[in-house]
Image (cartoon, rainbow, N blue to C red; front, side):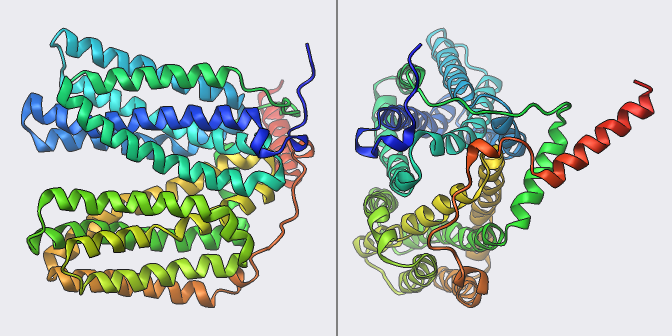
Length: 440
């Protein structure tokens, strides 16, 4: 068997492993987006119930949140490539089962909820595994560019998949799910050819999933740069997600046609894609502190402006502008977090941060609905702008963000596969005590 070359010797432009990973997830993400847009359309066509449509989509988000913490620990425990391959295969089977049910006109709502739950569970498992795997696919010098391109990948997949999903559903109800199954199959085939040096994992005598999860939570909380950026992101996501719903209500109240509202929302993805393409370059030109802080003030100013814009096309331009800078901050933060985190904790880092921001994103629309029902639409937007400005002030004055490292000390993953020393001693000591108590 030929030796696998060290990733540090391969530039990103010629990194076959990264290209395989990137293309596979464009395909997979587009398939998922096609299914997500087709799900509510299918439920409405079958039952006419908006509540049941929400139930199916809610199953995806709920399962992602429930499986999030265990998924991060499992990504640090198991072979990450195997996790990614398994998730693609499972999603292929789930989509194929739905196609078969539609073909035979046997589509109970419980099947749709189950498929949604499977999608959420696989998303929860795949995300931490891929994030942790990325630092072994690309060298540290290229990690910033890889993170930025992954962000762009998400926007490409979402825009193409959402557009294709609606069109394919018009062709036939089962066609979007055929496309989803094919996309996962192709992604799986590409992932099979990934080749990276194996992790050197030191065996742990007894593994306890709950302890591993708690270790990850304690480690993330103990890292002040991780903790502060996560808390700021939670506050920002909460108000931005609320604003996202309110601006749709605002546009409708101002008589903007539904088709134009769809374009307004799509412009957010276009702006995000452009921002992701320049994120790596921009992150090298400004300090981490500036790249993070300018996002808060930029979003606060544009949210405030939205309260006074009545033209639909201008609202679309505002949405596109709002998405331009967040990819740069995301690139800076994620790159440094990965480089500062031991390899055996990267899965748990990703899952903890994913859950915290995910909860904020889920609660945001609820907050937006409450604000829209309590205040006028314009005043609701102003409340969101005030909330973002408050978070911006806190972030600007934070000494932790001011000291955000420009060039973090890179952790040698080959030497960090065992649990951190203090925790390892504690766990091993507890294991010995358990053996004494059991008389083994």
